[in-house]
Length: 314
Ligand code: CP
Ligand code: NVA
Figure (spheres, rainbow, N blue to C red):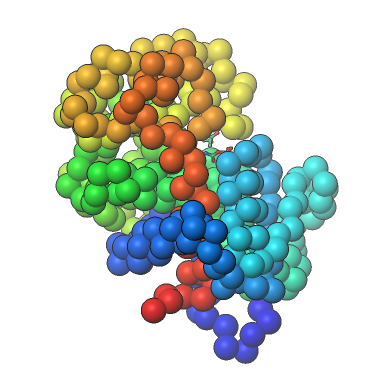
């Protein structure tokens, strides 16, 4: 860290790392930052700050939203991948963290095991942000809830239907539900259930925020938001064929949307595969807010980066 008066070090490795009160602040701040962006008004709180972005998996949205977002905040970025850095040549993650965090002010990592990002953070002098691990995708859920609030108001007391894999997105929805007071109806094929203990993290999840349904149509019944994700997440490609068979009935279609509330929204973190986890009529239909959802990654992450580096701005 460069400043003697640096803030207490705060990482964002999973959704549970912030409190409900901090989320309320971030959603308000993201709305303001978005408004300024739309009005071409300069917002440069992070001049002279550098974000290091480390990608061990592919990305479109996360890369563009963090990179464009950091420049818009007045800062700059360094982009590293496994293939073009010593990370891919077995330099210990602890050593990489010590070096990278002496030269930059903030680090975003997309990688495999959550334990890798935790080891990085434990050796970092600067805040570390999870840009997706096998276990969690907190920046995406931050954007999804912000998008829900923009369209429908508070998510507290509402029901989110998760149709598909019990993956990093599903785990993060569970943490968010427990923290922000809404309910998640989860439907996965047998063998792909959410690992509740893993999803909960150290903080645990409150009783009643999560219910399992073996039939995806039942999970969508009365939901305020229906959401899904790819059948095969990055890193699991070897299971592609068996997953295509197992997930065949977990395609969000117009019947599932009709079972949800009439004003229910549809979300997907993207990239999507039309005809697999979602029908084209749904993702390209009137209830879908996937493009707002994607754009909002940038606005919420700008609020997050500002918060981790500067704290609350009155
Ligand atoms: N939703 C999301 O994280 O997209 P990318 O994989 O393109 O970053
Ligand atoms: N669950 C997906 C999300 C992609 C943004 C994956 O991990 O590949």
